[in-house]
Amino acid sequence: QQVKALAKNWSFATEPGGKGLLTIPSEVPKQQIDYVLFRGKFKAVEARVIEEKVASDHRPVLAVLEWVGK
Image (cartoon, rainbow, N blue to C red; front, side):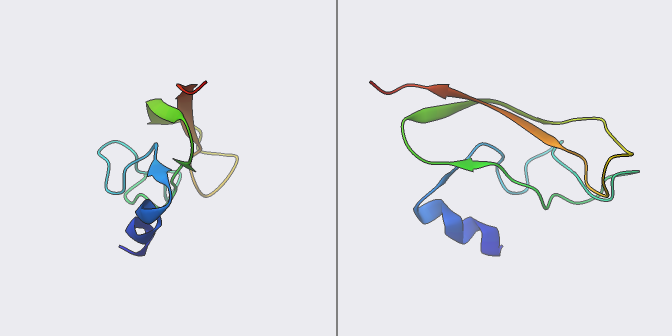
């Protein structure tokens, strides 16, 4: 996937092809096309799709990052 090319400079809170992170179409998601990426002294603690079908044609993604730097 083209999105994996971003891994050179970014970390994924939502891994490409991650199970349970399907976001589109919002009614019955079948594909993951939404990601959360970060750089710096953080680690991903949680990433999940929010059960929201009305606001968009994609379901929203929630990612919780923990700062581990000083």
